[in-house]
Image 1: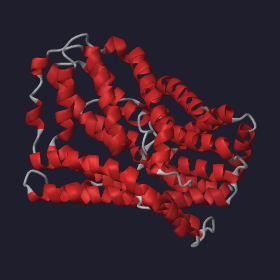
Image 2 (image 1 turned 120 degrees about the horizontal axis):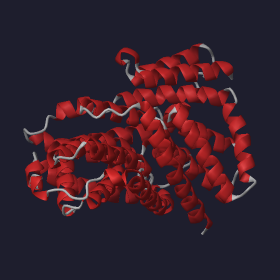
Image 3 (image 1 turned 180 degrees about the vertical axis):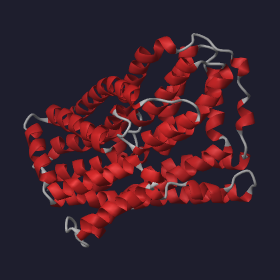
Length: 427
Protein backbone atom coordinates (compact mmCIF):
# COMPACT_ATOMS: atom_id res chain seq x y z
CA UNK A 1 0.00 0.00 0.00
CA UNK A 2 2.77 2.46 0.96
CA UNK A 3 4.73 1.66 -2.21
CA UNK A 4 1.64 2.13 -4.41
CA UNK A 5 0.83 5.44 -2.70
CA UNK A 6 4.41 6.68 -3.12
CA UNK A 7 4.35 5.90 -6.84
CA UNK A 8 1.00 7.68 -7.17
CA UNK A 9 2.17 10.78 -5.29
CA UNK A 10 5.40 11.05 -7.29
CA UNK A 11 3.55 10.55 -10.59
CA UNK A 12 0.79 13.09 -9.93
CA UNK A 13 3.39 15.59 -8.66
CA UNK A 14 5.31 15.32 -11.93
CA UNK A 15 2.07 15.59 -13.93
CA UNK A 16 1.06 18.80 -12.14
CA UNK A 17 4.55 20.32 -11.85
CA UNK A 18 5.75 19.40 -15.37
CA UNK A 19 9.44 20.12 -14.68
CA UNK A 20 11.22 21.60 -17.73
CA UNK A 21 8.03 21.15 -19.74
CA UNK A 22 7.89 17.38 -19.24
CA UNK A 23 4.70 16.22 -21.03
CA UNK A 24 1.99 14.78 -18.78
CA UNK A 25 1.85 11.57 -20.79
CA UNK A 26 5.48 10.68 -20.21
CA UNK A 27 5.20 11.46 -16.48
CA UNK A 28 2.21 9.13 -16.19
CA UNK A 29 3.86 6.44 -18.30
CA UNK A 30 6.98 6.68 -16.16
CA UNK A 31 4.87 6.06 -13.08
CA UNK A 32 3.20 3.10 -14.78
CA UNK A 33 6.60 1.64 -15.75
CA UNK A 34 7.80 1.99 -12.16
CA UNK A 35 4.63 0.30 -10.90
CA UNK A 36 5.23 -2.58 -13.32
CA UNK A 37 8.89 -2.94 -12.34
CA UNK A 38 8.07 -3.00 -8.62
CA UNK A 39 5.18 -5.42 -9.02
CA UNK A 40 2.43 -3.00 -7.98
CA UNK A 41 0.67 -3.80 -11.26
CA UNK A 42 1.15 -6.71 -13.65
CA UNK A 43 1.26 -7.00 -17.44
CA UNK A 44 -2.19 -8.58 -17.22
CA UNK A 45 -3.56 -5.32 -15.79
CA UNK A 46 -2.68 -3.37 -18.95
CA UNK A 47 -5.53 -4.72 -21.16
CA UNK A 48 -7.95 -4.33 -18.23
CA UNK A 49 -7.07 -0.65 -17.82
CA UNK A 50 -6.99 -0.02 -21.58
CA UNK A 51 -10.51 -1.45 -21.82
CA UNK A 52 -11.59 1.14 -19.24
CA UNK A 53 -9.99 4.20 -20.86
CA UNK A 54 -9.80 3.73 -24.65
CA UNK A 55 -13.33 4.90 -25.49
CA UNK A 56 -13.19 7.89 -23.15
CA UNK A 57 -9.78 8.98 -24.41
CA UNK A 58 -10.59 8.60 -28.11
CA UNK A 59 -13.92 10.44 -27.74
CA UNK A 60 -12.23 13.27 -25.87
CA UNK A 61 -9.54 13.73 -28.52
CA UNK A 62 -12.13 13.70 -31.34
CA UNK A 63 -14.31 16.30 -29.62
CA UNK A 64 -11.33 18.58 -28.96
CA UNK A 65 -10.33 18.33 -32.65
CA UNK A 66 -13.88 19.38 -33.60
CA UNK A 67 -13.63 22.26 -31.11
CA UNK A 68 -10.28 23.43 -32.51
CA UNK A 69 -11.57 23.33 -36.09
CA UNK A 70 -14.66 25.35 -35.19
CA UNK A 71 -12.51 27.80 -33.26
CA UNK A 72 -10.29 28.29 -36.32
CA UNK A 73 -13.41 28.81 -38.43
CA UNK A 74 -14.54 31.58 -36.08
CA UNK A 75 -17.53 29.70 -34.66
CA UNK A 76 -16.99 30.59 -31.00
CA UNK A 77 -16.01 34.21 -31.64
CA UNK A 78 -19.15 34.56 -33.78
CA UNK A 79 -21.25 33.20 -30.90
CA UNK A 80 -19.55 35.49 -28.37
CA UNK A 81 -20.18 38.58 -30.51
CA UNK A 82 -23.84 37.66 -30.78
CA UNK A 83 -23.93 37.30 -27.00
CA UNK A 84 -22.38 40.77 -26.72
CA UNK A 85 -25.16 42.23 -28.86
CA UNK A 86 -27.91 40.33 -27.05
CA UNK A 87 -26.61 41.86 -23.83
CA UNK A 88 -28.01 45.15 -25.09
CA UNK A 89 -25.49 47.28 -23.22
CA UNK A 90 -26.43 45.88 -19.79
CA UNK A 91 -23.34 44.63 -17.94
CA UNK A 92 -25.00 42.02 -15.74
CA UNK A 93 -27.09 40.68 -18.61
CA UNK A 94 -23.88 40.26 -20.60
CA UNK A 95 -22.31 38.41 -17.68
CA UNK A 96 -25.27 36.03 -17.40
CA UNK A 97 -25.33 35.40 -21.15
CA UNK A 98 -21.60 34.64 -21.21
CA UNK A 99 -22.03 32.15 -18.37
CA UNK A 100 -24.87 30.46 -20.29
CA UNK A 101 -22.71 30.40 -23.44
CA UNK A 102 -19.95 28.74 -21.42
CA UNK A 103 -22.44 26.17 -20.14
CA UNK A 104 -23.61 25.33 -23.67
CA UNK A 105 -20.06 25.04 -25.01
CA UNK A 106 -19.06 22.87 -22.05
CA UNK A 107 -21.99 20.51 -22.61
CA UNK A 108 -21.29 20.04 -26.32
CA UNK A 109 -17.50 20.47 -26.59
CA UNK A 110 -16.29 19.21 -23.19
CA UNK A 111 -15.10 21.33 -20.27
CA UNK A 112 -11.53 21.67 -21.52
CA UNK A 113 -12.68 23.11 -24.83
CA UNK A 114 -15.02 25.56 -23.10
CA UNK A 115 -12.38 26.92 -20.72
CA UNK A 116 -9.44 27.08 -23.10
CA UNK A 117 -11.22 28.29 -26.24
CA UNK A 118 -13.71 30.77 -24.76
CA UNK A 119 -11.31 32.47 -22.33
CA UNK A 120 -9.13 34.25 -24.95
CA UNK A 121 -12.28 35.29 -26.84
CA UNK A 122 -13.84 36.73 -23.68
CA UNK A 123 -10.65 38.66 -22.85
CA UNK A 124 -10.44 40.11 -26.37
CA UNK A 125 -14.07 41.21 -26.25
CA UNK A 126 -13.70 42.83 -22.83
CA UNK A 127 -10.66 44.74 -24.07
CA UNK A 128 -12.72 45.98 -27.01
CA UNK A 129 -15.40 47.14 -24.58
CA UNK A 130 -12.83 48.93 -22.42
CA UNK A 131 -13.45 46.81 -19.32
CA UNK A 132 -10.94 47.18 -16.47
CA UNK A 133 -8.95 44.49 -14.62
CA UNK A 134 -11.65 43.77 -11.98
CA UNK A 135 -14.39 43.24 -14.55
CA UNK A 136 -12.08 41.16 -16.73
CA UNK A 137 -11.19 38.96 -13.75
CA UNK A 138 -14.89 38.45 -12.97
CA UNK A 139 -15.64 37.31 -16.53
CA UNK A 140 -12.63 35.01 -16.90
CA UNK A 141 -13.21 33.40 -13.48
CA UNK A 142 -16.83 32.83 -14.47
CA UNK A 143 -15.73 31.29 -17.79
CA UNK A 144 -13.33 28.92 -16.05
CA UNK A 145 -15.81 27.99 -13.33
CA UNK A 146 -18.87 27.32 -15.51
CA UNK A 147 -16.78 25.13 -17.82
CA UNK A 148 -16.64 22.48 -15.08
CA UNK A 149 -19.88 23.03 -13.15
CA UNK A 150 -21.84 22.73 -16.43
CA UNK A 151 -19.94 19.67 -17.69
CA UNK A 152 -22.44 17.18 -16.24
CA UNK A 153 -25.32 16.75 -18.72
CA UNK A 154 -23.93 14.44 -21.40
CA UNK A 155 -21.47 11.57 -21.34
CA UNK A 156 -19.20 13.53 -23.71
CA UNK A 157 -19.26 16.76 -21.67
CA UNK A 158 -16.27 15.71 -19.57
CA UNK A 159 -13.63 13.02 -19.88
CA UNK A 160 -14.43 11.70 -16.40
CA UNK A 161 -18.10 11.32 -17.42
CA UNK A 162 -17.10 8.97 -20.23
CA UNK A 163 -14.81 6.95 -17.95
CA UNK A 164 -17.57 6.48 -15.38
CA UNK A 165 -20.31 5.73 -17.93
CA UNK A 166 -18.10 3.14 -19.63
CA UNK A 167 -17.04 1.56 -16.35
CA UNK A 168 -20.64 1.01 -15.20
CA UNK A 169 -22.06 0.45 -18.72
CA UNK A 170 -24.46 3.42 -18.57
CA UNK A 171 -26.13 4.28 -21.87
CA UNK A 172 -25.93 7.78 -23.35
CA UNK A 173 -29.68 8.41 -23.04
CA UNK A 174 -29.89 6.86 -19.55
CA UNK A 175 -27.05 9.08 -18.36
CA UNK A 176 -28.64 12.20 -19.86
CA UNK A 177 -32.04 11.40 -18.32
CA UNK A 178 -30.48 11.62 -14.85
CA UNK A 179 -27.89 14.34 -15.34
CA UNK A 180 -29.54 16.92 -17.63
CA UNK A 181 -31.95 18.14 -14.92
CA UNK A 182 -29.14 17.98 -12.35
CA UNK A 183 -26.95 20.06 -14.67
CA UNK A 184 -29.65 22.73 -15.03
CA UNK A 185 -29.70 23.08 -11.25
CA UNK A 186 -25.89 23.27 -11.20
CA UNK A 187 -25.92 26.05 -13.82
CA UNK A 188 -28.54 28.02 -11.88
CA UNK A 189 -26.59 27.65 -8.62
CA UNK A 190 -23.38 28.68 -10.39
CA UNK A 191 -25.03 31.81 -11.76
CA UNK A 192 -26.24 32.79 -8.30
CA UNK A 193 -22.87 32.37 -6.57
CA UNK A 194 -20.99 34.08 -9.39
CA UNK A 195 -23.31 37.10 -9.30
CA UNK A 196 -23.11 37.28 -5.51
CA UNK A 197 -19.30 37.08 -5.55
CA UNK A 198 -18.47 39.21 -8.61
CA UNK A 199 -21.62 41.30 -9.03
CA UNK A 200 -20.06 44.54 -7.76
CA UNK A 201 -17.13 44.24 -10.18
CA UNK A 202 -19.35 44.12 -13.29
CA UNK A 203 -19.92 47.52 -14.95
CA UNK A 204 -23.59 48.43 -15.21
CA UNK A 205 -23.37 49.33 -18.89
CA UNK A 206 -21.23 48.97 -22.01
CA UNK A 207 -21.24 50.35 -25.54
CA UNK A 208 -22.56 47.73 -27.96
CA UNK A 209 -21.30 49.75 -30.93
CA UNK A 210 -17.72 48.98 -29.89
CA UNK A 211 -18.23 45.34 -30.83
CA UNK A 212 -17.48 44.03 -34.30
CA UNK A 213 -20.25 42.52 -36.39
CA UNK A 214 -20.55 38.75 -35.74
CA UNK A 215 -20.17 38.00 -39.45
CA UNK A 216 -16.62 39.40 -39.39
CA UNK A 217 -15.55 36.57 -37.05
CA UNK A 218 -16.21 33.86 -39.64
CA UNK A 219 -12.89 32.94 -41.26
CA UNK A 220 -13.98 29.75 -43.06
CA UNK A 221 -17.66 29.74 -44.00
CA UNK A 222 -17.69 26.16 -45.31
CA UNK A 223 -16.34 24.77 -42.03
CA UNK A 224 -18.60 27.10 -40.06
CA UNK A 225 -21.73 25.85 -41.83
CA UNK A 226 -20.55 22.23 -41.76
CA UNK A 227 -19.98 22.58 -38.02
CA UNK A 228 -23.70 23.11 -37.40
CA UNK A 229 -24.56 20.01 -39.43
CA UNK A 230 -21.88 17.92 -37.70
CA UNK A 231 -23.05 19.00 -34.23
CA UNK A 232 -26.65 18.08 -35.02
CA UNK A 233 -25.63 14.71 -36.44
CA UNK A 234 -23.35 14.05 -33.46
CA UNK A 235 -26.20 14.51 -30.99
CA UNK A 236 -28.47 12.27 -33.06
CA UNK A 237 -25.69 9.71 -33.37
CA UNK A 238 -24.90 9.70 -29.64
CA UNK A 239 -28.51 9.06 -28.69
CA UNK A 240 -29.46 6.72 -31.55
CA UNK A 241 -26.31 4.70 -32.26
CA UNK A 242 -24.86 4.21 -28.77
CA UNK A 243 -27.77 1.92 -27.71
CA UNK A 244 -26.91 -0.23 -30.76
CA UNK A 245 -23.41 -0.78 -29.43
CA UNK A 246 -21.63 1.96 -31.38
CA UNK A 247 -19.19 3.64 -28.95
CA UNK A 248 -19.34 7.41 -28.52
CA UNK A 249 -15.71 7.62 -29.65
CA UNK A 250 -16.65 6.20 -33.07
CA UNK A 251 -19.47 8.72 -33.50
CA UNK A 252 -17.21 11.60 -32.43
CA UNK A 253 -14.38 10.36 -34.67
CA UNK A 254 -16.65 10.37 -37.75
CA UNK A 255 -17.67 13.94 -36.93
CA UNK A 256 -14.03 14.99 -36.58
CA UNK A 257 -13.05 13.32 -39.89
CA UNK A 258 -15.93 14.99 -41.77
CA UNK A 259 -15.04 18.42 -40.39
CA UNK A 260 -11.34 17.87 -41.13
CA UNK A 261 -12.23 16.98 -44.72
CA UNK A 262 -14.32 20.15 -45.13
CA UNK A 263 -11.64 22.36 -43.54
CA UNK A 264 -8.92 20.70 -45.62
CA UNK A 265 -10.60 21.76 -48.87
CA UNK A 266 -10.10 25.43 -47.98
CA UNK A 267 -7.03 27.52 -47.23
CA UNK A 268 -8.13 29.39 -44.09
CA UNK A 269 -7.49 26.51 -41.67
CA UNK A 270 -4.30 24.50 -41.31
CA UNK A 271 -5.62 21.04 -40.54
CA UNK A 272 -2.05 19.85 -39.97
CA UNK A 273 -1.63 22.39 -37.16
CA UNK A 274 -5.01 21.48 -35.67
CA UNK A 275 -4.05 17.80 -35.58
CA UNK A 276 -0.67 18.68 -34.12
CA UNK A 277 -2.34 20.72 -31.34
CA UNK A 278 -4.82 17.97 -30.45
CA UNK A 279 -4.33 16.53 -26.94
CA UNK A 280 -2.50 13.36 -27.99
CA UNK A 281 -0.64 13.36 -24.68
CA UNK A 282 -3.97 12.57 -23.01
CA UNK A 283 -3.93 9.15 -24.71
CA UNK A 284 -0.59 8.27 -23.14
CA UNK A 285 -1.59 9.93 -19.88
CA UNK A 286 -4.83 7.95 -19.58
CA UNK A 287 -3.19 4.54 -19.88
CA UNK A 288 -0.23 5.45 -17.67
CA UNK A 289 -2.11 7.30 -14.93
CA UNK A 290 -4.87 4.75 -14.70
CA UNK A 291 -2.32 1.93 -14.46
CA UNK A 292 -0.84 3.76 -11.47
CA UNK A 293 -4.34 4.08 -9.99
CA UNK A 294 -4.97 0.38 -10.63
CA UNK A 295 -1.91 -0.26 -8.52
CA UNK A 296 -3.72 1.47 -5.63
CA UNK A 297 -6.62 -0.89 -6.23
CA UNK A 298 -4.30 -3.93 -6.19
CA UNK A 299 -2.78 -2.67 -2.92
CA UNK A 300 -6.21 -2.52 -1.28
CA UNK A 301 -6.86 1.24 -1.11
CA UNK A 302 -10.17 0.98 -2.95
CA UNK A 303 -11.30 -1.75 -0.53
CA UNK A 304 -10.73 0.67 2.36
CA UNK A 305 -12.72 3.36 0.54
CA UNK A 306 -15.41 0.78 -0.24
CA UNK A 307 -15.81 0.23 3.51
CA UNK A 308 -16.41 3.97 3.95
CA UNK A 309 -18.92 3.95 1.10
CA UNK A 310 -20.75 1.05 2.77
CA UNK A 311 -21.23 3.28 5.82
CA UNK A 312 -22.69 5.97 3.60
CA UNK A 313 -24.99 3.36 2.04
CA UNK A 314 -26.53 2.59 5.43
CA UNK A 315 -28.10 6.07 5.41
CA UNK A 316 -29.85 5.61 2.08
CA UNK A 317 -29.80 7.68 -1.11
CA UNK A 318 -29.25 11.12 0.43
CA UNK A 319 -26.40 10.07 2.70
CA UNK A 320 -24.78 8.05 -0.10
CA UNK A 321 -25.05 10.98 -2.50
CA UNK A 322 -23.57 13.59 -0.19
CA UNK A 323 -20.99 11.27 1.38
CA UNK A 324 -19.66 10.03 -1.95
CA UNK A 325 -19.89 13.42 -3.66
CA UNK A 326 -17.94 15.34 -1.03
CA UNK A 327 -15.38 12.54 -0.53
CA UNK A 328 -14.62 12.42 -4.26
CA UNK A 329 -14.66 16.22 -4.55
CA UNK A 330 -12.01 16.57 -1.83
CA UNK A 331 -9.87 13.81 -3.36
CA UNK A 332 -10.19 15.44 -6.79
CA UNK A 333 -9.12 18.82 -5.43
CA UNK A 334 -6.06 17.29 -3.77
CA UNK A 335 -5.06 14.47 -6.13
CA UNK A 336 -6.55 15.62 -9.48
CA UNK A 337 -9.90 14.48 -10.83
CA UNK A 338 -8.59 12.22 -13.61
CA UNK A 339 -7.20 9.51 -11.32
CA UNK A 340 -9.84 10.18 -8.65
CA UNK A 341 -12.83 9.26 -10.83
CA UNK A 342 -11.37 5.78 -11.41
CA UNK A 343 -10.50 5.40 -7.73
CA UNK A 344 -14.12 6.27 -6.98
CA UNK A 345 -15.47 3.86 -9.60
CA UNK A 346 -13.30 0.96 -8.37
CA UNK A 347 -14.33 1.68 -4.77
CA UNK A 348 -18.03 1.75 -5.66
CA UNK A 349 -17.63 -1.54 -7.52
CA UNK A 350 -15.95 -3.07 -4.45
CA UNK A 351 -18.63 -1.80 -2.06
CA UNK A 352 -21.76 -3.75 -1.16
CA UNK A 353 -24.06 -0.97 -2.40
CA UNK A 354 -26.75 -2.04 -4.88
CA UNK A 355 -29.77 -0.61 -6.62
CA UNK A 356 -30.59 3.06 -6.31
CA UNK A 357 -27.97 3.58 -3.59
CA UNK A 358 -25.22 2.37 -5.91
CA UNK A 359 -26.67 4.54 -8.69
CA UNK A 360 -26.51 7.55 -6.37
CA UNK A 361 -22.85 6.80 -5.66
CA UNK A 362 -22.01 6.42 -9.36
CA UNK A 363 -23.46 9.80 -10.31
CA UNK A 364 -22.16 11.48 -7.14
CA UNK A 365 -18.70 10.24 -8.14
CA UNK A 366 -19.11 12.07 -11.45
CA UNK A 367 -20.34 15.27 -9.79
CA UNK A 368 -17.53 15.21 -7.26
CA UNK A 369 -14.98 14.66 -10.03
CA UNK A 370 -16.44 17.43 -12.22
CA UNK A 371 -16.98 20.11 -9.54
CA UNK A 372 -14.46 19.23 -6.82
CA UNK A 373 -11.38 20.17 -8.90
CA UNK A 374 -12.50 23.81 -8.94
CA UNK A 375 -11.50 24.17 -5.28
CA UNK A 376 -7.77 24.14 -6.08
CA UNK A 377 -5.57 25.07 -9.06
CA UNK A 378 -4.24 21.50 -9.24
CA UNK A 379 -7.65 19.81 -9.22
CA UNK A 380 -7.69 19.38 -12.98
CA UNK A 381 -5.25 19.65 -15.87
CA UNK A 382 -7.70 21.96 -17.63
CA UNK A 383 -7.43 24.50 -14.80
CA UNK A 384 -3.63 24.46 -14.94
CA UNK A 385 -3.73 25.02 -18.72
CA UNK A 386 -6.37 27.72 -18.27
CA UNK A 387 -4.18 29.58 -15.77
CA UNK A 388 -1.30 29.34 -18.24
CA UNK A 389 -3.46 30.79 -21.04
CA UNK A 390 -4.51 33.65 -18.74
CA UNK A 391 -0.90 34.43 -17.80
CA UNK A 392 0.02 34.65 -21.50
CA UNK A 393 -2.86 37.13 -21.94
CA UNK A 394 -1.61 39.26 -19.05
CA UNK A 395 -4.23 38.10 -16.51
CA UNK A 396 -2.39 36.59 -13.56
CA UNK A 397 -4.31 34.71 -10.88
CA UNK A 398 -2.33 33.71 -7.80
CA UNK A 399 -2.85 30.25 -6.34
CA UNK A 400 -3.82 31.76 -2.97
CA UNK A 401 -6.53 33.90 -4.56
CA UNK A 402 -7.73 30.99 -6.69
CA UNK A 403 -7.97 28.66 -3.69
CA UNK A 404 -9.97 31.22 -1.70
CA UNK A 405 -12.37 31.90 -4.55
CA UNK A 406 -12.52 28.23 -5.58
CA UNK A 407 -13.65 26.98 -2.17
CA UNK A 408 -16.18 29.79 -1.68
CA UNK A 409 -17.74 29.20 -5.10
CA UNK A 410 -17.53 25.42 -5.28
CA UNK A 411 -18.90 24.28 -1.91
CA UNK A 412 -22.40 25.82 -2.26
CA UNK A 413 -22.73 24.76 -5.92
CA UNK A 414 -21.58 21.22 -5.07
CA UNK A 415 -24.06 21.04 -2.19
CA UNK A 416 -27.02 22.18 -4.29
CA UNK A 417 -26.05 19.92 -7.21
CA UNK A 418 -25.76 16.83 -5.01
CA UNK A 419 -29.14 17.65 -3.47
CA UNK A 420 -30.61 17.86 -6.99
CA UNK A 421 -29.15 14.42 -7.78
CA UNK A 422 -30.56 12.86 -4.61
CA UNK A 423 -33.96 14.40 -5.33
CA UNK A 424 -33.87 13.26 -8.97
CA UNK A 425 -33.10 9.66 -7.98
CA UNK A 426 -35.69 9.70 -5.19
CA UNK A 427 -38.53 10.62 -7.55
